[in-house]
Each structure stands twice: as C-alpha cells, then as structure tokens.
Picture 1: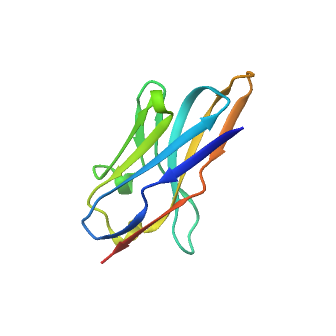
Picture 2: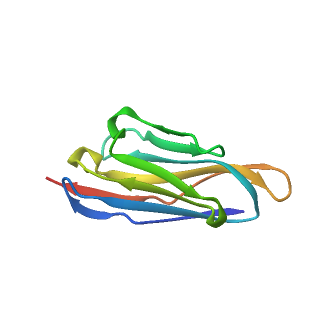
Length: 120
C-alpha cells in the first residue's frame, strides 16, 4: 500500500558528491520516520542515517560531517546528500519509511535500493 522509489545513485570518484532521494506514495496519512541503510558487498546491512517528524537527525559515526539527511514533508521525500565520498561508502543504499496509513494502521516500507560506487 506504500511504494518507495529511490533515485540518485551512480558512480563517482573519491571526494565527490551524490544526492539520493526516496519518495513515498500510496495510502499514507502521515510519516514519522525516514532513514537510509546500506549494504556493501559481502557485508551486513548497516544503518546510515535517519530523520524523524521533529526534524531531529541521527548519523552513524562513519558518515558524520559528510552526509546530510533531509526531508520534504509535502512531497513525502527523503534525501541523503553525500559529500567527500570514500571507496568504503560503496554499497547499495536503501531508504526506509515508517508511518500511519489512511485506514489507521502502521506501515513500514523499504525501497528497492540504489547502487552507489565510489572509485579510488
């Protein structure tokens, strides 16, 4: 009932920047949590950043000062601005959204993933 569409991944050189976006659509009443995880080849998925309704943000230590998460509530969209990218940031990035459906039930959805590759 909730679909997430991600975009913005690609290939970039170390030190470069990319901006990911993720838009939620469907029978959404409200969204209270939006975040990003990533999974590098051969590694477990790890949490990267999240933003909640109040606007408070949290980041994993490895991306603090380089990544910025933001949201556009009117568009049900979350962004991840990634600067000073490093080869170790190479991964498939997944957005994660939680909230309330129009019918009153909670929902949680994951995006399909977008590949980010950082060359050295």
